[in-house]
Image (cartoon, rainbow, N blue to C red; front, top):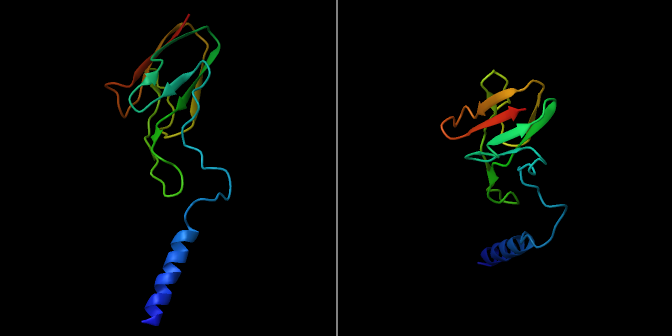
Amino acid sequence: MRLTGLLAGLTVIGVVGCGGGGSSGPPRQSGNTPPPAGGVTVFNDRFSPDTKVVAPSTTVLWGWNTCSGEGGYGGGETCVGHNVTFSDGVASVTQETGTFSRTFTAAGTYDYHCTLHPGFMQGTVRVE
């Protein structure tokens, strides 16, 4: 009986000690990439903006913002993979976070999509 009481007491101390009230460092950052200035954000269901007009020799940056849920202790954050694939064959890797860039040197219309979600994740870069 004494052993059971001792174990119960140690369990309470252990739970209280792991209460999460303190901090041993900076909070874990979400996997989302801040929206790129003048770029395109990759969301879970769309590119925003879905049409971008730029001048020749412009580099466009895509930033992934596909994570949701809490990313702290205990987890729960979920990130979804997407890619940027152009009709001319240029493509990013499929990724859940991070960025991809492409420099557009020639005037024209460059259509792209996510190969995992081609029916609704589509975009266009027009170089004028």
